Every structure is written in C-alpha cells, then in structure tokens.
Image (cartoon, rainbow, N blue to C red):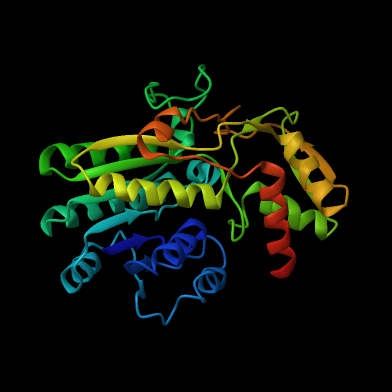
Length: 317
C-alpha cells in the first residue's frame, strides 16, 4: 500500500512512519514549523530517512498548489492526516492560525483525495472535542457540540468535513479521537515531558488548579496499534466512523506528578496556579466500540509507560 502521512516528523507521525515503512511505501509530509524546535523533528525521523520505502517532503497542508504537485507525482491508496496546529491554550491566543491549518488544511487534503480518486482517509481528531462532557466515560455517541477551546472546535470541524466528503464522494473515512498521547518523542510542551525535564533541571513546575483534574493518558504503542487496526478497517469497507483511542482509565494531575517523581527519584518544586481557560476537568475514553469493531486493546500501564518515557528522556537531554 502507498500511504501519505501528514505531520510525519512529529511525535505520533514519526513513530507511525517507522511502524509502517517495513510493509508499505510511506510518503511523509511535514512543514517543520517552529511550534517547537524543527531539529527535534529532524531527529525524530533520522532512523528512516534514506530507506527505500520512505520519503519525506517538506510542505504545508495550507498550500493547495504544493499538495496538488505531491498528489500528481505520487499514487496513494490511503491518506493518514495527523498534521495540525496542536494545543488548547495556543489556539485561544491565535485562532486564525488554527483555522488556517486545522480546518483549511484538512479541507485541502480531502479535496485532493476527491480530485485524485483516493478512497481511504484517516483523520486524527482529539479527546478535547468532548469539552466538559457531563457523562463519563466519553462515548462516540455523546454530543460534541460544546467545545471549550478553539483547538477542539477545529477538530469538530474536521470531523464534519470528513463526513461531508464521505457522503458526497464515497471516501471511506475513520476519525480517531486520541486521548492524551505520551511516550518517547512526546512534544516538549506537553505535561509529562515538560514536568520531567523541569524536575531534572531543578526548575519549578506550574501546577494548574488543585491537582484533581484527570486525564486518560494513552501510551504511543497503543495509539499505533489502534491506527494500524484502523487501516485494515477502512481498507476493507466503505464507511464513515469515529473511534476513541484511549487507555480507558484516568490519572489525576497529582498522581501524574507523583509518578514522575517516583520514577525520577526526585521531588518536584511546585508552583500552584489557577486553572487555564480551555482546559477540561477530565478526559476518559469509553473504548468498547474500538475494542469490538477494531480489536483495539491497549496494554501499557501508566507507570510502565512513564518509566519508558523517562528512560528515553535521559538519553535525549
């Protein structure tokens, strides 16, 4: 299978390229933007650059002409769309940029699929789409009409756009709602990576709220397993579907910090701050649908996942 992966040099994208390149021809697309150090992204893909089955292209999904060139010069069976401006708080500060990348960029890719008769598409959505949902765990059947950050709103828009292209052009599409992915190569702005690095450097960590907010942390290997199973799913039928990919267990902020402290053998210096606008109180995935339909079965216990991440971090500081 010939696969286009957008956001290919990022955290999830680089791991996915590595996982797929042995059995598929993978074209990776990334704009290497400065949201964090582009050299980090270059390092993410260093082990697969030069392989016969992998090619990385520097390009921006906002550039329709560049996308047209890529789609004309390559034959794709599947597009896996991971590229996005990420993060809740930055989206509140710069909603125009998030709209251009996450909404218009997704539209550009789906339009290219239409124009080039590509019938399989996987879209990376987010648990943030649930907002402060009152029902837990979060089910794919729950209403997601009340996002509390612009990032979440762009992901809802992406899902709606995907459904429209499925309906109009018979493209088989799965939208995957990722729940707080962590592990080696995690973005440096995300809490586990940020806190662990700051604790090691004897820096004060910012703790927003009373420590009782909860997240459904999902280890990267489990996310990759879910994506691979989704590839088989969209390849075997014409469908539009939405799936939660999480661990289906919650860890409080306080517990997350204490797990990092225990793993490092070092106590954090904490600075307690107010809750931030756009932050949700809890994320908690109902994965019964993903288990039943995809055969998704996450296996990484949180403490073990943090241990693996810390091992990687110490080797890469």
